[in-house]
Image 1 (spheres, rainbow, N blue to C red):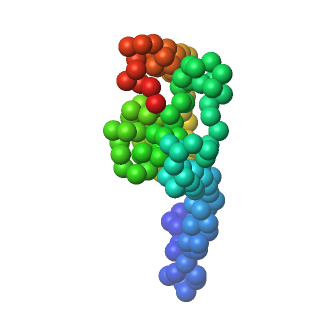
Image 2 (cartoon, rainbow, N blue to C red):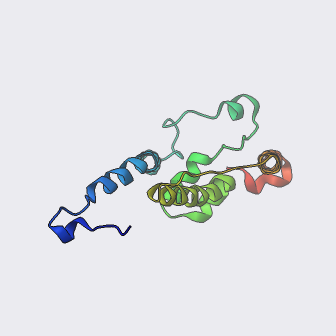
Length: 152
């Protein structure tokens, strides 16, 4: 049987605000995450981590003298916010590469949320072990004498 259009009989057209409300609900979490990230980057961009006293020191670096994978991340974010990508890479190369990757995942997440599809990132054991190995290698190399170019 054919579908009847309610407008052809003087009926009211379907409400589009219901669909818009659903899209707003589905994108609320990605929007909240974006707001938190923007606020954090704005704060780090305004309060320079290169000046002492603004942020706590890394406990691992303070007590052992070993650079962790996150050491220099705030300085890297500060440089990134100010458009100094070379300094961001020098302060923490892993973090500087992670910023655009986060943006890409966030865009994908938002597009899928608008379409009503969940974001599924299925990382298998190989991916997780590779990520762990990358973090370990980065940490070890930046603490060796020849890895001085990775020091923050």
